[in-house]
Image 1 (cartoon, one colour):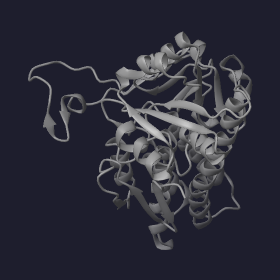
Image 2 (tube, one colour):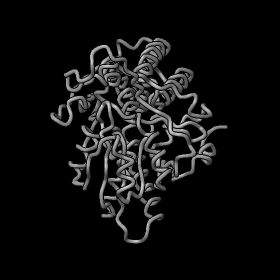
Image 3 (cartoon, one colour):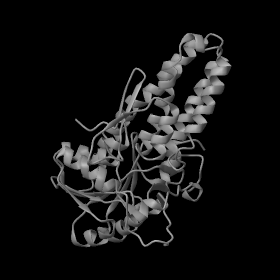
Image 4 (tube, one colour):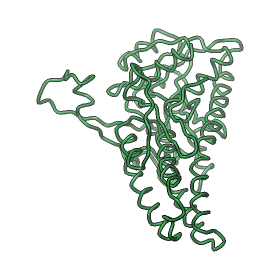
Amino acid sequence: MSLKSIKYEQGQLQILDQLLLPAKSVYIDLKTVQDAWSAINTMQVRGAPAIAIVGCLSVAVELHKKDASSLTNKNDLKTELVSKLRYLATSRPTAVNLTKEIDALLSTVDRLVADDSVDVTSMKLKIIESAERLLAKDVSDNMAIGQVGANSLLTSVLDGVNVTVLTHCNTGSLATSGYGTALGVIRRLHELDRIAHVYCTETRPYMQGARLTAYELVYEGIPSTLICDSMVAALFKKTCVHAVFVGADRVARNGDTANKIGTYQIAVLAKYHGILFYVCAPLSSVDFSIESGDHITIEERAESEMTDVAGQRIAAEGIKCWNPAFDVTPASLITGIITEKGCITPNELHKLGPV
């Protein structure tokens, strides 16, 4: 059974505190929208799908606590929900999943307010149901992505050949509600007994690969090796790597993809060495409203993530730092985008969304 980064049941929400991994596995309660905002912003929970789910479920948690006497009318409830959902959207700007799910909930709120057959209590319950459905849908989508990705790679290699792959950052159960996206593909290949070896990068400066992906690979018993980000070129030159699988925090309409910093340079190296490069993400990660990656907002994080390790400063005092959390990989470097609906080339992606 895969790890669970999110536990939820009837208004009780817990997350696995990823700041403590791999040393400790501790679940913390999120009782309010403020708790969720803080957990997302400080990266106690991370990964675009997981961020969206936790944000929306925190609203469900607060609604569960509301008794009938506190529900005055639908418009007042709408005003409260709009304020909380817009606040959640400010927690991390690059990942599009949270924004899209918030927009979907806001649309549901508007529809329920306009429906005279729905009273305020029913409105509350329907909003809760909408948020809770995200958990099951995410697992289903991830498993579909795993199958699509495994099929896509295996059709490109000789029959019977076990594959060696590389992944960057963390895209497994810890980044989703379960199973994973890019790591879900790797998990599926392992289930099919077609994995020879997995290489995962440390993913500096936040070390999601070393702390989280390595943790998941060991937990699943998948043969794997951890490498520094600066070793990828040497690995590609020395070792037969069949493919790279990465996740996505936002995909533009033309296929340009924002993902954890360091993804772009791996894509360049993969292109040079003739290695397949796949982006794995649910369609909810695609932002059809923006034409290219030039329009993706890139979050910049605190200098301390670079200058300090485990609370100990390692960089010279007074040095300036630049710490973008993401970079954008051009569509021209991407072999295919693996979604729950299939594997498509970047130049075909626009056909799946609004014009």
